[in-house]
Length: 114
Image 1 (cartoon, rainbow, N blue to C red):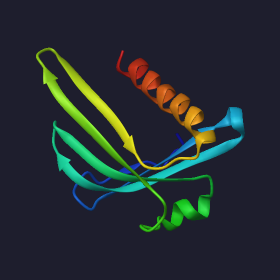
Image 2 (tube, rainbow, N blue to C red):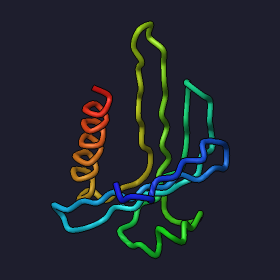
Image 3 (cartoon, rainbow, N blue to C red):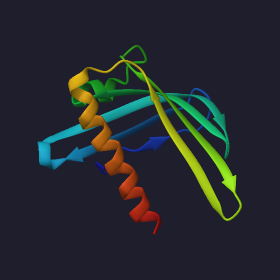
């Protein structure tokens, strides 16, 4: 993560942002969006725009192309269940890289929580 890039105003209409340094591809991946549903410990829905352009990230255009993200949570006694879903059109050549990226993020989260 790029230091200072992460924000999360977890309320309906609130903004979230994060920039991820990807040194193996010599690039920074910028993500931003707005929360549309916030049900604590149950469900989050938000838009997600992606760019590799720092100026576009800074502009945070609400009309930028975006996907819908739904994150569902469920209490399972001494454990939690979480489901991450992404909806929207994506060029076929980006699907594999996107899948690898998301798997990497979740692996990092698992390591962090351990």
